[in-house]
Image (cartoon, rainbow, N blue to C red):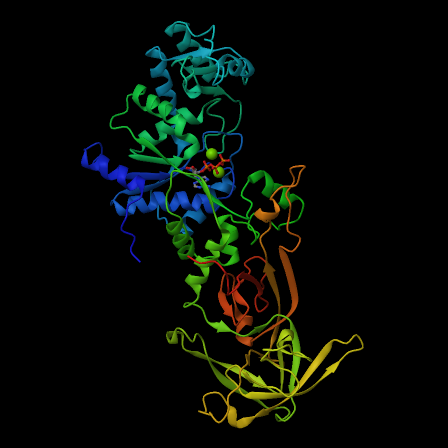
Length: 550
Ligand code: ATP
Ligand code: MG
Ligand code: MG
């Protein structure tokens, strides 16, 4: 379905192009390499990439790596992989903000020379105190009226390493009485004697985000610098920086609402704790919504794109139901994947009149809704595994599966009639007995009688025993995500490990990230961490049914 209406960002861009403010569109995604990307970042990536595509412009991946304290090369690698995987092709347009340190420094010097920046000796606490708040105007720093010459000398000395961290900062000289706190002489450079992941020890002064970011955008000739809502009241400062630093055809900032999902954890602090406590097995645990976790769970870039499109772009914060993400992966996979037979909670079914030692290969269609996927041959024999829930000793009304005396269809095989069962000393059913009718073979055109139930199966002799993992949301919004003490209120059933599942032999060959529909049980993906050759472990991506409607 083609979406014809334009979102508010596209309307702004149209206006800018019509009025000649810009003659092209250039966007960027500017992650700080201090963690893994999550579903929220995917929205920003696909939004920026999509705009560049729509307007025939370019899309940059730029690492906003101006803060040496938190950044790591490990994250640079993972972010690049994730952006590529999402399909946002940045080609050779990969940039590092830290490569602009010299230009940022020169911008700072220019501001000093224009009397628009000064070196301040107040401590961080004093600066905060002087700044005031929404109810009180700020107080000017006693260092505000230093001469240009003194400021140039002191800033040079900051750069040369003469001062300790925090001893001096460079501040923009704007307006301590501004109703916008961000404009009250913000700090634009600080001293930090730290080794940077890219520039090493070349610098001991680093630019602050609000100063660095507009300059990065301007250097790359970004036209529309799209960011999230919390930066809305930083926009006057953004505009001030690009204007006072005298960039031609400067970029403009446009804000949109962050994407929030219900029933998930995205906060770095919380995820770190879950990893440390061993509750999840890393940042890519399939219950998380980092891009790596979604990929491991079996989500596809197509499903994530569909999701982001459905959510749309808005100026108001809101949360999106996790079920909508599930809807998108279900929709993406349902016609693409083969429907395989896998038994998650097995009980034996013995067909007593089927010749002992005999096996046969039966043709099974891969996807009834998509004949293009063809069919495959599946071994059948005298002893099968079926789902425990597909047999009942005493069935309730409207139960059409196996119970003594009832006949059902074994999917793509034969009709079987239940003749009895065996139990262990605890009363658990261990074996179900049946007889089959050779005349009812699937595809033979048999139509003398009908049965109401169809169940799936795997042949015991050739079945592959595998581990399967089922997931539930790790938190539940309705029960409260947090406990009173601020800790996470975790769902104790978020992970179920089933060690005794049987799948048809073809599934033994599944490789990492291969995904399938398991008849009646959902969509599953071979785990990329724990599968071994010939020994796949399957994660449930999503079950087949949901009450979610769109
Ligand atoms: P932090 O500073 O803690 O890393 P962050 O992950 O939000 O927070 P960045 O790594 O700088 O910060 O994010 C890169 C880009 O992704 C930014 O443009 C940011 O606005 C955007 N972004 C981050 N979270 C979301 C979200 N939930 N929805 C949409 N965009 C987001
Ligand atoms: Mg980040
Ligand atoms: Mg950030």
